[in-house]
Image 1 (tube, rainbow, N blue to C red):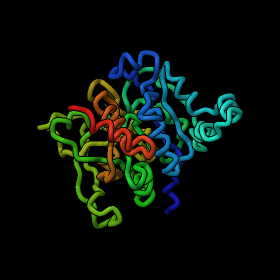
Image 2: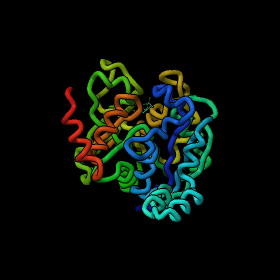
Image 3: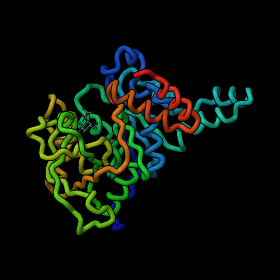
Image 4: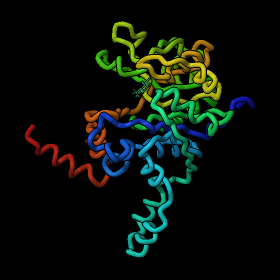
Length: 299
Ligand code: G1P
């Protein structure tokens, strides 16, 4: 590692969204706290951070999100209650939610877009590289997704994002990349690693430069904050992270890595149900019984 390439210690998790796609469930409860099997959705991203060497999580929150703060805080009364009632395993489970991580919170007071949410974390991140994880997306693979991007950043000094092939009818839901192969320089990732030339946020299928969609995992150099500060509202009238990433791409400082694991987009009801079913099927305690139940359904 050259001196300029610093360790990626911090991750920004934007959680200020209103969760309107899950109403009425999200009227009084943050979308991020909806349980997928037995954990709140956001805990999957936090566990991915812990498995990726991240030490400090910065949540960009909004109004009515205090349940997230409570969830990742210690709960001494609950822990001693469980210990006293002879439930040490449950007590340990509660204790381990925070995974030895440090948590900070800052607010995005207005819904001005993902780019704006990330910019709200600028002061807490400071002058160092950082990860961004969109908590709607659960990514499961042999190597934790964020860890793979951290390794690409540490090997190249450039920003790194995961992409995956998306069907034509879903291209308009993603940031789509325009890429060139990068094989000769970084053979470790083979033809999965691509140099990003440009990105377009949520293009129409016939205007998309490729079918490679941004999954919601990013490792970025701190220069991105300067670009975000200059980014004008784009698609949907919002300040888009994608538009600031274009600036990195134009300077040849952004790689896209085709993700090899499984991505669950739990940001809408159908994706949420798919994540729930598939994760329950893989659960060591629930899987067999749940599979038998599903087999017995008359569909
Ligand atoms: C965001 C990003 C988009 C990315 C997507 C992944 O969009 O703006 O580039 O492809 O997440 O889920 P959102 O889904 O928040 O509208």
